[in-house]
Image (cartoon, rainbow, N blue to C red):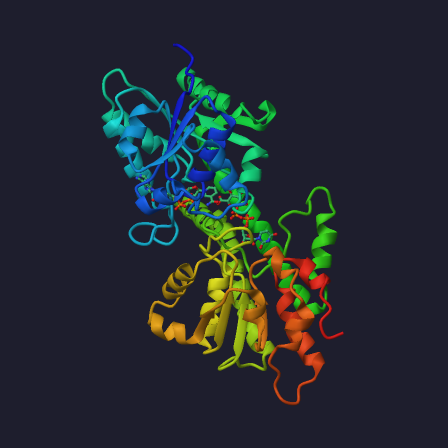
Length: 472
Ligand SMILES: NC(=O)C1=CN([C@@H]2O[C@H](COP(=O)(O)OP(=O)(O)OC[C@H]3O[C@@H](n4cnc5c(N)ncnc54)[C@H](O)[C@@H]3O)[C@@H](O)[C@H]2O)C=CC1
Ligand SMILES: O=C(O)[C@H]1O[C@H](OP(=O)(O)OP(=O)(O)OC[C@H]2O[C@@H](n3ccc(=O)[nH]c3=O)[C@H](O)[C@@H]2O)[C@H](O)[C@@H](O)[C@@H]1O
């Protein structure tokens, strides 16, 4: 069997993963033609826009696209053509939590993976390496193989690989340039190992060999769920400790610092927060819970479920703290929420903790003013409508104002919430903000300091709190 050399790559799914990942492959492998395809025409048009108004905000991404688009990087809605021409196909479609049917609320919805796989089977006229890039439940590759083999033409073969993505939004380009590891799972057959080598050769154009890990298919699939579950578990652990800190007077930043100094624990992912957000942590843990239950491991399922429950608790605990701090009612009060994205340096709002907080504030009939440097107004209205399904958008709009600067958001407010750790919030002139906040009659500065500080203590960046000196 001749060694496979990848010359043309197709990526199905031009989203947060497919777009940046394959753009970086195109940059680092000028000898490979990369075509990223999607059914969503508006998204593809944005990737192709003459002024590089790409559909996702990610530092460094536009630079990469500028260097390769039209050279060896193409974006298209012609899925079939890209499949036909490619030697290697990444399947990088969404795998959200199922909303109905068996496993609803826990299992991954594999509908998009299945239709992409069926399309490959229907269209391909030559052998392909098909790579699972999406995060999927353990043994999904087996279902993909069954679909592909049942439909393959004589003389064509499909080799399935698992190559989960570990990039984080906001640092995607840096993560892709210098990944901690690239993980490739394959069947341990001669053909499987050969396909694995072909993909490893692509990454070897810029990733050191010792960082390219090759394992079995099922281990690779499970490692992705395990990595996300363990990262989220650290956040829930520190958030659980933050509740104890607030009850005892200990300082969570000091505890986190002290604990993280232990080299066996390490300092990363120990930042107490309003709760983790993003499209993946909750979805992937629920997926693991479902897998554990399906395997008749109820204790294991309960263990991982608790990570998500703690996260929900943290979000509602924070809303309650805001209400408590504002004298047990926020009805008719004005609250500024700085940051709507689920983390800094992204415009992504999926599962953002800010959405839960604002939903809670609206249900208490507070007025909310929102500012986020990247999230569009349209996206905010869509997210709030989905979060408050029984409230008409017109009613929501009477309670919510969206503004275009942090200072504007903070003027004449009773409380300010920093929900996303955007760096620009560090640079705000907080003394001016404080001077322009609403005050109730008879209240002294100290109450205001307590109020503002209480809110800030929950912000994602302890730096803000530590540098902050309001009211002194
Ligand atoms: N967002 C992230 O930071 C990360 C996501 N992942 C995983 O990567 C996968 C993709 O995630 P995102 O890129 O965030 O999703 P996304 O929703 O941004 O992008 C998926 C794209 O696939 C397209 N699509 C769906 N079915 C299609 C089909 N049959 N043919 C052509 N296009 C199709 C959709 O139109 C959409 O544009 C998920 O499994 C996710 O869990 C993994 C690591 C990081
Ligand atoms: O599979 C995925 O989608 C990705 O999920 C996460 O990446 P991402 O969700 O983009 O961003 P993170 O930096 O992990 O942050 C997730 C959430 O946790 C919060 N967080 C993070 C760190 C921390 O110490 N505390 C904390 O509350 C963040 O503010 C954010 O809301 C993982 O970090 C990636 O490795 C993984 O590829």
